[in-house]
Image (cartoon, rainbow, N blue to C red):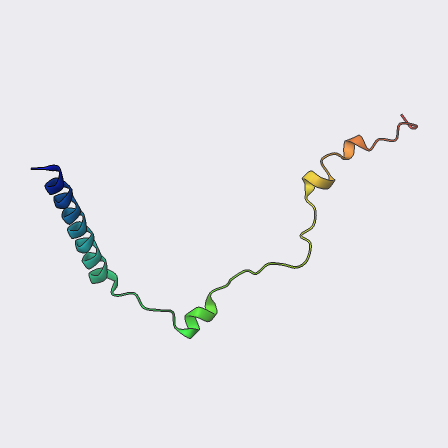
Length: 73
């Protein structure tokens, strides 16, 4: 076998394997169908929020031990 024959053989083998897998999946699950309007309406999608999310513990509470009044110590 030459290199060109080998590459053609391996490409055809890969395509056959892919086609067999596709046929097996279609036999089990059927062809793909688009969402119905009822199914599409049930999909929850998040949108960008225009409000602030608030600050977490790392921003506010973690370094509070540094806020010591030195006059009372």
